[in-house]
Image (tube, rainbow, N blue to C red; front, side, top):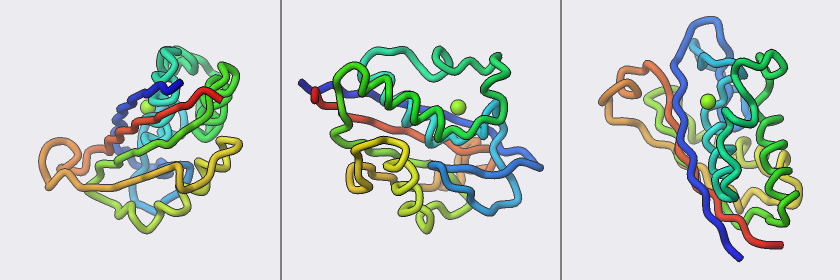
Length: 159
Ligand code: MG
């Protein structure tokens, strides 16, 4: 009836990259480095969705050695991941995610992220998608502004 999945991801900051978080472009002097648009929040969410049904992880479904996924908008990866959930007869109950970043400020963009994510997941609404943001209190690689981490849990329900 119910299944739960968990996801975690990290990407390093790099110059000359756009910063994408939760399907939203955020103005910042650094972006995240990765094969795709490096949207660390969407990657954690994809892994939570895939994990809920033991479908493996984002690297299995969208290998970073595959040229088809170079520079891809991660919202497309989310769309595909959720379709796999739907194909197996499940729908999202709710998800809860945390972005850990020293900068930029994430909270002003949360409503736009919820809207972007629910738009990529047919039949879902923003209030099923919780996104929280915290800093790492200047500790570790996040605290040194070397990158951003994200965690997500997703509950899916048999339709
Ligand atoms: Mg990733």
